[in-house]
Length: 154
Image (cartoon, rainbow, N blue to C red; front, side):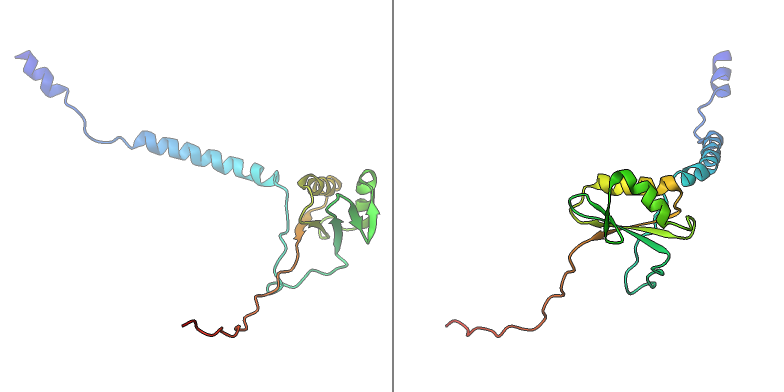
């Protein structure tokens, strides 16, 4: 008789216990809430170039243009800047490091390491606004005029 009594005492529980799931979800939520500000601060801030139909181009007096040619030459104001003096030259051109934008215009064939070099130099001197633009050939719109049809073959 005790055997029957034991079976009724220990029955299989067929319900899902949600308490551990909720505990894990809340712990993950707290971890993400604490870590998000640190992740956002460590990112490089970049101003993406806008299209001509969107916002107007920023004032040229506030923008410092750095051109990188396909052979790796770095140009500012139409003059070649040696890599050794890039930091000094860029620091002399940037007067307001918070509001002034450094726009990097790279040739489409330039090695990415040259762009990263200019970006890291700008970050090193404290530039807050950085833009990157790849210079490509302008694509002409397709000529939509119809060609005269040739005579149909019989």
